[in-house]
Amino acid sequence: MNRRNFLKTTGLAATATNLPVWFAEELMAQPSVPTPKMKNDRIGLALVGCGGRGKGVARVASSYGDMVAVCDVDDQQIDSAKEYWPKATGVKDFRKVMEMKDVDVVICGTVDHWHTLVSLAAMKSGKDVYCEKPLTLYIDEGKHLVKEEKRSGRILQTGTQQRSDPNFRLACELVRNRRIGKLKEIDVYLPAGQRDGPFEAAPIPTGIDWDMWQGQTPYVEYIKERTHLYFRYWWEYSGGTMTDWGAHHNDIALWATGFERSGPVSAKGSPLIDMIPRGFTASSEYELEYAYPNGVIHRCRSTTANAWNGYVVNPFGQQHGVRLQGTAGWIWVTRGAIESSVPEILTEPLPSNAERLYASNDHMKNFIDCVRSRKKAICDAEIGHRSATMCHLGVTAVRLGRKVEWDPKKEKYKGDKEAEAMAKLPMRKPWDYSMI
Image (cartoon, rainbow, N blue to C red; front, side):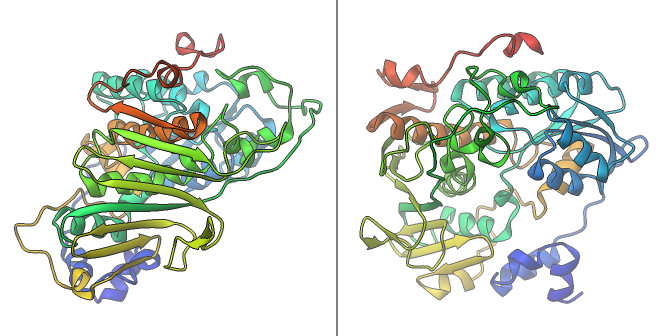
């Protein structure tokens, strides 16, 4: 099989065209591992959260199983999902899905603030779960997920799919093996968020359970711009682009540093623009600086173009991505591209004794393989929790407009009651842990 056919048949063509020859040849040489079969070799699937992203992920999962149920608090979303899976049972309360014995796997594509409760309910009911990122709404939630994954032995995959992209894995392996020398600085560029408003309350549309949609968050009047695509621009439900795109690129920064199961020790942040009163609340433009125990500095900036505060911050012509700077050069990586200041950094193969990372070239297939083999997925609960924690540290620093100190071992802020209060927020009853 030649390189082009290999990339096509493995689904890597879109992301691997810029890979160095030696790395592409490694991928070709990897043996095809037989996938352990389940009893009937067809996995029973359920989709909870039937928006565009949820349906997209579930359609990929459907190649490995049968959709048994589709669930959403909005009747229109259920109807939309049933156009793809007409035989699936449509329900509005996800707890009914957890009672279905023919459901093996839950795909959680809900709004961010429902990720934790749905994932916990799935694992407690004996089901494996693929949960979209960010895994949590605030830091404390992740501790519950890590604990439950360990207790139940269930498989959880976080939807930070860049871990299954060869470009990002190659970048992290090269950095971990000091190909750029000693890692000194990381620059992460994220798209800016939406800045709009003011918005007006409106009648609740027929077919939406608005109370349940809000779940654990404070009850407010219905505003169309709080729902669907726009929920991520409200602090109540998400963290803006910091937890949206930041959950991807900051996750890669963690992977490159080797602190993916711990994290940074501080975050200093500030918003760069005032939000419009009675409009979106999550800062649309911001800057952050993280510090790691080994002294590595990690800057994270939002940008809508190639300029920020009057000077160019991203010379690579991309709106977002990760730049890894070492004492011997840099690597720039984003979706579909990897570049370096010194060509040999990429083109020279790693030695046989090099440190190699968890290899996955297909995020959903990795999850399904782990469902069958019972091995941990590439983005298990702790990985998802630590990546989300980093983003939440950034959100807290930006909201407070200052530096926060963090103990990644104890998972607590250092002498900062104001920040610590943001790590565990009140949950509006009855939408709390007691409901599952």
